[in-house]
Length: 356
Image (tube, rainbow, N blue to C red; front, side, top):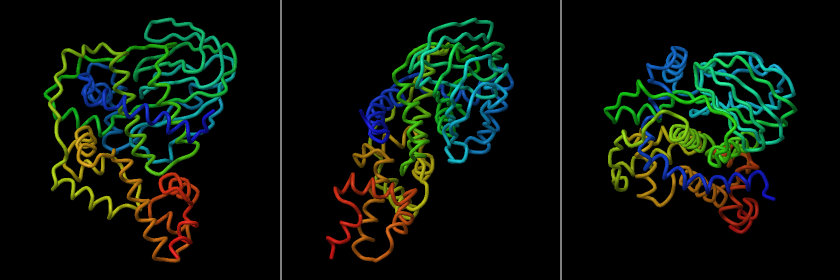
């Protein structure tokens, strides 16, 4: 059985393949912003909440549902204070009973991770009932009123993901002449989707045991989540979308700017959006062009550079390991030790001793 950290790496490897296919090649990907922030045909609650989030540049305005909806639930954890720019995530356990009636301001995706129960719910004029097992997914678009949800049994853990108007998606929309006004998400529930389950479990792992580059990872997961929902749970016709050509590696001038920015801000919590801004590209274009130029995804490149700086400090200074971890942008000394041993093959202390 994989450890939580090992599971996250496993899910991450799968997601890299999915993300390349879904974000950069899937013709429906570009409609993500139309769904999340610019869709005028959807209820006002949808558009207004996502405009608020977009102005704030993150999950500003995202509040989840809390006790207003989950009257029988216990909140196990939240990403509210993590500074994630791609989504808000919560971990809940739920006891048997009826849940509260709400009209959400945000699009919510719920994935059951443990348990086996029967669930009935009604929203958008549709009554759904199904047997839920680990991996079962529920989707409720923003502005859809759910007037009945009943859980027939206890659910040990679910992950709830709320999608804001992502700056990543907003950038993608600006590059196209699209009218997203007629696009909408479906009120779907009780389905299985391996990619959405993998995303939920990776988010759960990041919440429980955050790692360096976590914000960059979550931004990528949020984009993949939005694209997957659009492909399978919207009225979108993929053939109606034309994706502009995105070919070639990042040119030397832009690459140098990004590399210099990473070196200058290595101790900070770098994001895909920040790096893409330095390159004057959308995050969609940047991630692909950067990997073509360097052979590494942006998140992995940042981790490698942090380890490189740490090796220099270990060899040339007597700074405490905790200080080196902070200088190099790791969230804690244990996380520094984990990544150093994973990539270098030995612990920071042993490496320092070997340097004499």
